[in-house]
Image 1 (tube, rainbow, N blue to C red):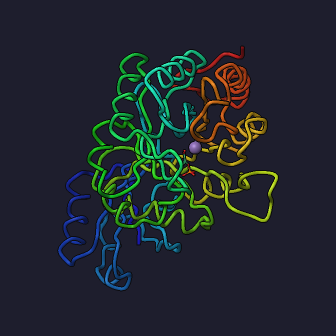
Image 2 (tube, helix red, strand yellow; image 1 turned 30 degrees about the vertical axis):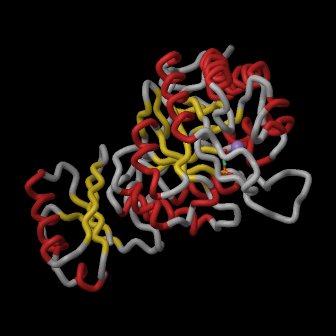
Length: 345
Ligand code: PEP
Ligand code: MN
């Protein structure tokens, strides 16, 4: 149930409602928007209805949230959520580009990639240090050494870092190094991990599961938010279908659906979505045109030597060309790329 307060409601009036809800054991989540303050009461709907809150002069109305996800929904928070990461923002009119190698392989590799993507205009460096690989014989990542290399790349370039957490046991370690914590597709429904991330105050990039419905994906975001961490960025990375010419089927319609249903920013990963670098630029542009708030793109200085996902990685040169197109597209759409209104190049 959401309780919509009158415009101009005072803090003590908000507190009065919050206290009454808490007293009867309901979960309370506050959304203070520019126009409206909304209080989400999570728990027994009949109990909330019986409390007579609508009789209070500063309560405008009470509206049941019809969907299973509450805090994620636009009913709870009508305006777009915008998160700041370093100098850049994501959500609203701000578009954030995250780029870098699939996996951190060496200091030289990650520094070259970081410098290249920074020069091209990316806002965040991506790179996996813990890699959830299908085969136990494949490269599993450099673990903490890899995290240190990412920290060094951040120091040298000023780019914030997004990296994947693979288990609830390494949340603290990843939290020490990451500016955005990535939950991989394979872990989207690892509810223990999601609960741990709910305790943090740091943006979480939540990838859509390999065969997750949009509702399951949004419910996974609800797990994180219900723990108190409201900074969730959703990432569409393709789902498994019967098609074999692409690694996954990139579901761009999910962007339109999620933007309607939720206030959270949505990122698209065309690299895992297609599995082939040749298709990445087209799908990156299509994602932006569909309303995505950001992109996550794999870039490797030498894709042919990559220890993971080389076939879907762009060279720095091709990423730079793509960025020129993205800047033009963002400008045409009236969106900002990285905290600045971009002029067409
Ligand atoms: C990755 O980003 O390198 C990755 C493993 O992605 P996903 O979880 O989408 O497969
Ligand atoms: Mn990858």
